[in-house]
Image 1: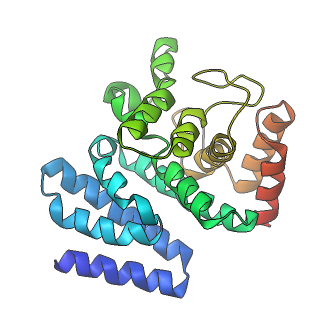
Image 2: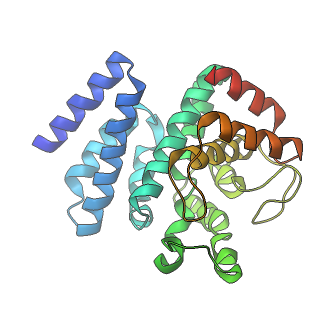
Amino acid sequence: REAQAIYQEKFLAGVHSKNSAYVKTILNELVTDIFHEARIGAVMGMFATARESIDLLLQDYAGEIIKLARPVNELDYGTSIHSVNVMAISLSFCQNLSVDTATARDIGLCGLLHDIGKSRISTDILYADRRLTNEEFKTIKQHPRDGQKILAEGGLPAEVQQGALEHHEKLNGRGYPESERNLSFFGRLIGFIDCYEALTCDDRPYRRKLEPYAALQLIKNEMEQGCFDRDIFTEFVSCLS
């Protein structure tokens, strides 16, 4: 109960002060802790905190997030941070796009859960500190489809499921898992932000993280090849500046 009270106090203080960076930090701690508690079986206390706190940002879906904690707890800390960051950037971007509250909430939820399909990938592959083999990469490429199935089982909205399924698709058909071209708004937006966050967040075995300008330049080059939505790119650059 004391832990719940501390989290609640911190989270509410951040919300009332409108300090988004602080809220993101507390939410990340909270999400990480509920997944840890789920792993060791002592779930009820932290789940109550999640139901109360996450509900402030994702009003109608705290229950669904809790249901999905079991598969997500298999993900590593870096993936958890990435997912929370994608959610936070997506919600901030939605404000600049003047997206209605209900749609923004679903986009934020999609950002938080877009990589949930990785919970069905072997840890030997998922956490490999090296370049993957072609066969291993084929396995990785199934995680959007697995994510869509998990979200469907959890009763999440169709738009959220579609965004998870499409977040590695490209408008020119060069993405995966379906090589789809006709992408939903959720898929185009989450796919763009997922790429930007991954490039700027941390080092990978095959590359160093990039500064924002360098990341945007790389994405711009891919956009000009037909990978990303030009309107989303333009609005995102305006949002950052």
